[in-house]
Image 1 (tube, rainbow, N blue to C red):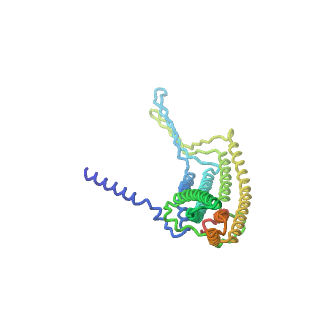
Image 2: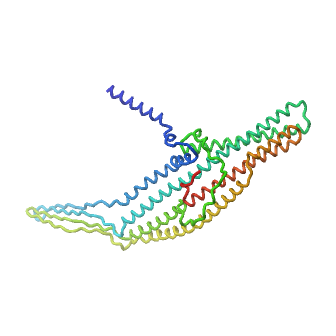
Image 3: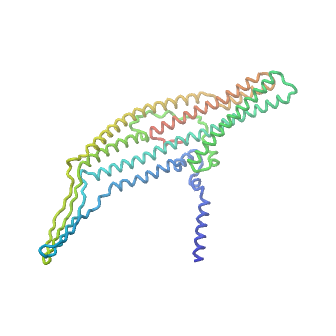
Length: 417
């Protein structure tokens, strides 16, 4: 007994040790060597994708459920009594097999296949959403790094200018106003930095949740600013789209059609048929009779008209919904295409932030020599930050529009960051 206890202690200890040394299993599975690897990792480990994958695996069993046939039914009775002093024993036994008329089983199987397809499309939709969110998160995290650098540079500049003013033995009224203005501007940029740091922390947590990998391993692989942008995705009819938006509505239409067929099949009764055996025993005689037993409801009072009417109306709704979805998706594609073209046009024509940063250094040197007023320093830093911020917004708009076009066209999983 003692040896057995030691064995279990060792086994439990080994299991705990393996559990404690395996928390980075996702990190080991996800080999991160670039931004695309981060996206691929998120598509495998994001909670929404994992849950949708499990639902898909579950719904694949619906076909097996639909294929099931009703069990055989055994019906019987035993009667006993007396007739003129003779003992009587009568038995009747019937074994019934249910025949589902109207093709009920075949239509159930067809419905199960459609439900299985819907789960697969739900998985695709979750994967598309995860891809879009992950790509935007990666680009935004890189943008926050550049914005933080701009803010830190402004804070450092104001600190330097304030030290220079404090070192003066006496300040003129204009210099005193400049000192107050620099202090207010520095406080403003400190608040901006706080907001950016908070946004950065939120996005890093979302990225870690999606990939199950610590941000320290991902930070070095954020996508750089795009110098060249892909050509506008060629216009194509949304009717042939493989994206989840149109595909889900088509699956909904097929499900409505399958439900209508099932409702029509239910108007047919189920026929139960099988062998029957009847025996009757007297004291000295025995009689045995065999035949066929049949059981079937008479479809007079209920022809399932209500369910058929409902299913028919739902089929009309699904057909109309498909037409409306095709129209709205076509409009949505046109909107995203215009967003992408407008944003990329601005980005291609704008000057680099690095070039503008070099120019503002000249203005600072002029101020230190007393050649320009402090208002120019404040305005230059404000404009530099706003240009950086606006340029990042346009970049994010272009990325968002481009990947939404990929989703609509059904090519998102072929796209590369």
